[in-house]
Image 1: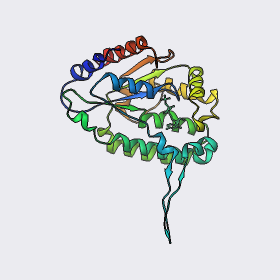
Image 2: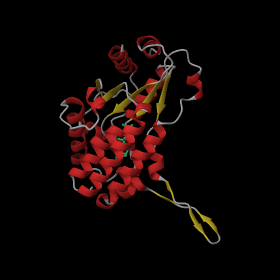
Image 3: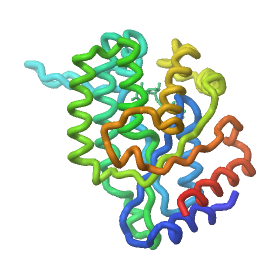
Image 4: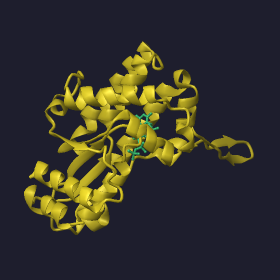
Length: 258
Ligand code: DCP
């Protein structure tokens, strides 16, 4: 499919100053954010995907000092959260958001520093979906208690206010598909930790995305967030192996940002 589409978007439709542009891809679990992010990267020379640090959540390093030297082990916080959400949701949401923040603050890839166009960083999710989709949902389900929720919101607002200008988004791409389709894709990919996820959970997350990005009824703390442009893409169609569908989606991305 055409790689010129995004190249044109990156190099001419956004202003050519060499500052970084940032776009976040949002959508339900297993909707295909990573696949779509890779598409964007392969189609635009100035695009860099900043992947979600899931592997970090699956391997939390536990180096401890003992009298006879350091001992290393790791724990799978993603699995712990799904296994016992009341005990681990707050810890998980803290760690996942902090690790994401750290990843998003990393410097631009060297190859993009040479680029003549405007570099675009593509995030798979954002600190905003961490809060307004997942953490909020866990709070509403009673898996994060009101004290934990108050603490979460307090440090989240503080960190975003401190570092937000360095990870400021240009816009959001919402990959929208039915919870049933996401359930099928989730089953197909077979991530061990997600085996117990029920349709009902994906339905709740779907409604959270709809409230935030379509109905605009989620109360957000950050003024700029409410004003961000949102591109809604139909992710119901299988786009992974269909060049025509990919091209259509990329054209929509170009038109939206131009
Ligand atoms: N997760 C969570 N809370 C967060 C972020 C993620 O509980 N704040 C969970 C949901 C998934 C896993 O982490 O079980 C990865 O989440 P994503 O939906 O972000 O990533 P996917 O790999 O499912 O994305 P896709 O398949 O769309 O590429």
